[in-house]
Image 1 (cartoon, rainbow, N blue to C red):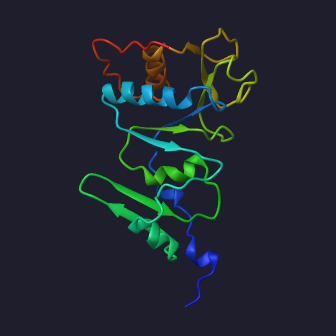
Image 2: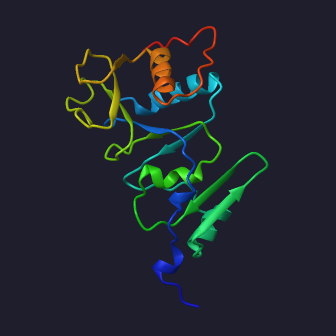
Image 3: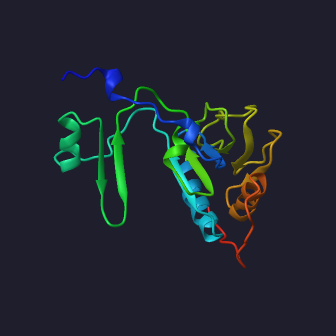
Length: 193
């Protein structure tokens, strides 16, 4: 039986998505998005929250390695391949477009908050990390969906501005913004930059 591209790709059902809060950490390459994500994930999970994360890659990626069984399945024509172990699962799926963040939420069930890295053009809450020495131009200044900025410079963007090492205050802000239960630990981890 011959398959067309339309037969092979089914849209993700957004209507099944739970009403989980989500936000993106945005900024240009080299700004420190991944480092901030790692620190936020650590702090928020330490506070008892269950997190899901999504990384956007506008250039495409290869999650599987050539020669591995799941890679061979995909190369042979499988539309979706999964690998499963007693501790984790992974999936590679063909898609027909660059998905918006909200379209991916159904794939992350049973979490309290979804943190995404990237998706700077979406219409969802964003926190920009901006270091003027890395990128003179900001990625989302003036965006109506920008809820805060993290920087090593004093910025007046009309949204709260957090210093790079103010992880506790940023985590508090996120919990307050999304009305997430506050079970603050006795001491917050201080970050050295």
